[in-house]
Length: 281
Image 1 (tube, rainbow, N blue to C red):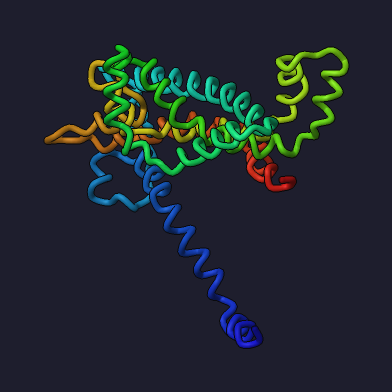
Image 2: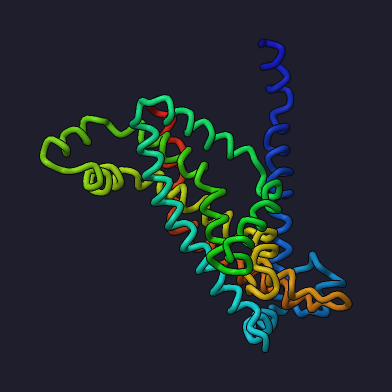
């Protein structure tokens, strides 16, 4: 221990430099987007890292005024998919997490273990069987199909967050409500669920960002006939033989704005919701 402390005092610059390098690595893609979105298209390929001077809004106008309405159609589909997915996921995860957390049966514990094991399965592994199921049920190339996929795949994460936070809610509150004549349904929605606001914010932020940024699943499940999302729209804006990089950066910038605003609106509950389950086991 003394040797380690002496090494730290001799090189106090190591940690700041390491933090600066890591920060620069994460900030570089953001810097490239922010600079190139306000730069004329002819300057992007030649000088991608230079500052945009004079700045221009032509890239944003071109992305918004495309004749095929690529951004607007993708925005409508992304908002619809994300909104319905996170609402259904929040309700199902909260109810299931509460039941599994309060139940003392072995079946409930086994179900919780199976759900947690689902967190370790990448979505690409199950994409082929999922598309077969959606094709058999007639939901392939539909918005309902991608919403059903999101709900089925992300429920384990929602249950994991809610069940950890529900353990911090005193059971006496529910028992008091039931003594006053409230049923289980009313007790959950009027007593328990309002206390889960931080966990709800964490689930909404995490799942909202993941579903909004998802590229592969909408590309495969929706297909060309089922429409596009904002992330798939960026991919489709790049042609085989040519690409307007100004429009591409404009689309990327516009695609990131809604989810950034959504995160900023809920971020004050974010950390509290994630750490709430660690307070009381």
